[in-house]
Amino acid sequence: MLAKLKQFFGNPQAQLSDEERAEHLNLAAASLLLEVVMADESMSEQEAKLLPDLLTTTLNLDIADVQELIGSAKKSQEKSTSLYEFTQAINDSFDVEQKQQLILAMWQLAYADGHLCQYEDQIIRRTAELFYLRHSELIQMRNIAMEQQEQP
Picture 1 (cartoon, rainbow, N blue to C red):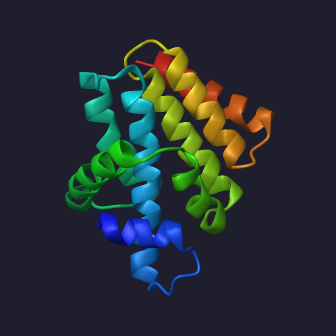
Picture 2 (picture 1 turned 135 degrees about the horizontal axis):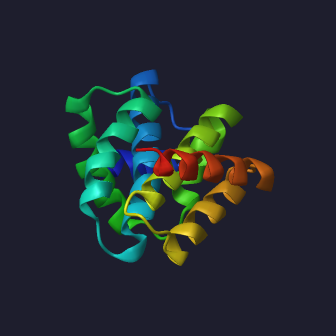
C-alpha cells in the first residue's frame, strides 16, 4: 500500500482505477487526521474513540475498512515529510465542501481531549491554507467543532 501511495504522490498522472484513487484519497485524509492526533505526540482515549467515527462519517466508509485504513495511515503519516504530500491529492479530487468537512473533522479531533494544543492548531491552519480555503471557512469549521464539544 505504501508503495502505491508513493507512486501516486510521485506521479499524480499515473493511471489508477477509481477504486485505487479512492483508496489513496482516503489514506491521505486519514493521514491528515492522524497528523492532528499526533501533534501533541500522544493519542488520548477521546481521540482514539472519535477517529474511527470521523472516518466513517467524513469518508463514508464501513467501520471494518476504517481500522485497516488507520493502520495504513499511521505508517504513511510516520514516513511523511510534509502536509503537501497529502493535501495535493485531496486538492485535485475534493470539492470545497469536502475539504471543509475534513477541516471540521480535524478541529473535532483537536478539541476531543478538551483542549487545543498549539501544534494541532498550526497543522489545521496550514492544511486549510494548502486546501486554498478562506480564513472565514477555517474559523466557521472551528466554531462548529467548538459548539459540538460544548454539547453534552
